[in-house]
Image (cartoon, rainbow, N blue to C red; front, side, top):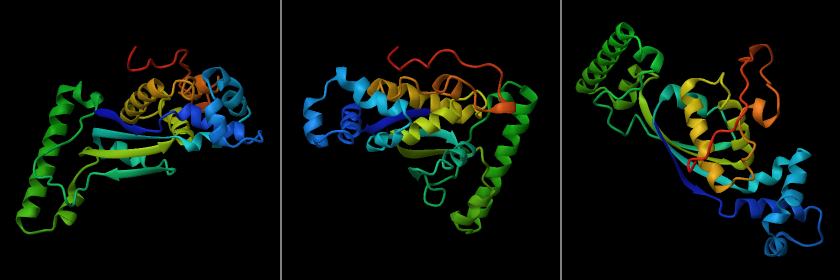
Length: 229
């Protein structure tokens, strides 16, 4: 798995702060951006956020390349609908050799890993047979598994990204999407530290678990470090 921050709104905190302040000022955002400094951050951005006015964060966006993950993971990822996605096509990209993700829980069990690999080999043998019989790739792909490796480009605004991180850095999130979310968090904390300083699962961002009876009973007490730490 590899997560790369491809692009992001430059001066995101300055922009969102000025946009928030413009709601309560006779001056427009461009004038306020000229007056902005980090000392104004808490009042201009922190105050509205503490009151639940997260819409101001929608002015900032972040784009990631996520590589070497399973289709099982991306099926979960695209459920976050306030986002944009561009995923590797199984119709136009050749799948003529096996590329799949083996979960650690399988890999650590030798017998299970051998069984898993045997099944994957059988799947690709069937896929190759179908394409050799001139079955279109768009139809042959029906046999490909959730484990199939894929790449996807993701863009989210800061508000949706905070929501995504809250759900997917939780210990109860599936292991693969949790690893992706934690890496996203490390990357955005480098470029927008104020916006994401308290990002993470509910036990960190809200101060309490929101999973109810499904809680892991093992709350996190520290934020994930940035990639430079």
